[in-house]
Structure formats: structure tokens, C-alpha cells
Amino acid sequence: MISDYIALIFFVIAMVASPGPANVILFALGCNQKFKNSIPFILSVALSKQLIIWPIGFSLFLINDLIEQYSSIMMILSVLFISWIGYKIIFMDFSVKDKPNVWVPRFYHGLAVHPLNPKAWLMVTLAFTAFQSQGVSMETIPNIAMIFLFIQLIFHSAWFWFGSLIRKANLSEKNSRVVKMALLLSLFVSIVFSYY
Image 1: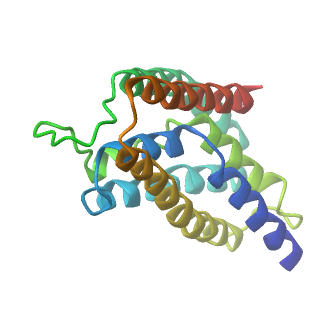
Image 2: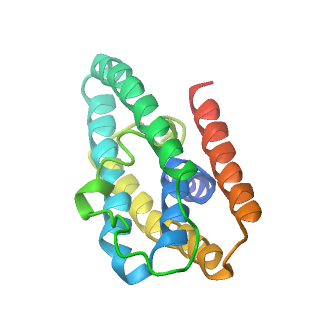
């Protein structure tokens, strides 16, 4: 049982720390805003994974058919969401000049991030199926939820901080395009990896 959780912790660290829609959003936000203004959003992004951990855990525990129907609906919504993220990144301004009308996402905006993120669905499903040799139980669901939450708070804040370093670097237009293309590429690769 302990070895299951140790393996799960390393898995969650690898998945949460790697590029994906949530981390790309947080990196891009860090390029535009100060950390203090974005704390509610960062917290809500981390908490949004709870919106899929519990339904997946309970559905695996109770009803296996529910997850397939829910997953099909979420796949369509996630494609729309990821397309919107890409659009926002392309038109983002990385400059440090004062921007009076910059959009600051609210707590409730972050709650949609992980439910619409196919990489999040993959990692949560794998956390329940591949790292629980005793099967899913009423004990494993909150344990997995807490492991994800703790690790996400660390790495989501780190991705935001890396984005803020880009903002402070005051990149040229050419270098700004390179960063945007790298973000879009990492977003695309994480989605392809999640679906195939």
C-alpha cells in the first residue's frame, strides 16, 4: 500500500510538472500579471482538479459506464477550451508596460481549467487505475485528491513564476513570438499525448 502511494507521488509530480493546458495558462498569466493578483486563480486551477478526481474515483468505485459518457462530452468541450487557450496565447502581449485594461482571471475561471483538460483526465484516471493495487476505495479517493492538490499548488505556482520571469525579461517581439510558439507547441503535444 505504501509503495502504491510512493509510485503515485512520483507519477503526479511528473505529470503536474510537465507542460499541459493548465501550466501553459499559468505560464502565460505569469507573463502578464503579478503573483499576488493571481493567487485566487492559481488556487482555483489547483482545486479544479478536484472536480474530476472525485467523480472519476466514485464512478470507478461504483459505476464504470458513467465515466465513458462523461468522458465523451468532456472531450468535445476540451477541444473547444484548448482552442480558446491557443487563441489567447497568440494575441498575448508579453511587454512589461502598464496595461490598464488587462484581463485578470477570477477564482471561478480557474475552476474550469482541469475539467476541460484532457491531460488532467488521463492523469487522474491513471492515478486510480494504475497506482492502486488494492483497487479504488473510500480511503484512496481522498488520499489521491490530497496528493494532487499539494503537488499542484507547488508546480502551478512554479509555472506562473517562470512566466513572470519572461515578463520581467522584457523580450523583443521576435523572442516573444518564439515563447508563444513554444507554448502552443507544448500545448498541442500534451493534448495529442493525452488522446493517443
